[in-house]
Image: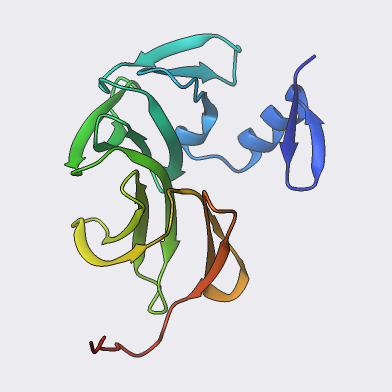
Length: 181
């Protein structure tokens, strides 16, 4: 029997499947597996079979997030890929965003005005903030070492954790601010 964490509770797979079907969009009826290879297996929660393997990355896939009706993946091949379901139900890449460095982690958040923003950490010790869906860069956060963990908190805050062990807490400002040297 496979067990999965759901919030603070450990659930058997059959209960997890029931939860998904009760409030799922089509993208959520699948389990996307991060294997630390260049491919992403897609498992059906209906029959527990691998129904597709996503193979568009050319290096290790480091992070996956499901957001809205899209799957976002990032890799050490310096790309973030946006996947969407075709009419036939398979996923295909609809957009590829290229970075200068390998991409380690992704997190989708909403800013103070409820606009979607993608947080994207790279192995040059930076965290890029992109407006979605345009991928317009709106800022960058620098760290002492690679940011390996990005988590959303309550009340518009998010957390970053880097290789030094530091955890930083960030909150969106409701007013634009200028940085002065």
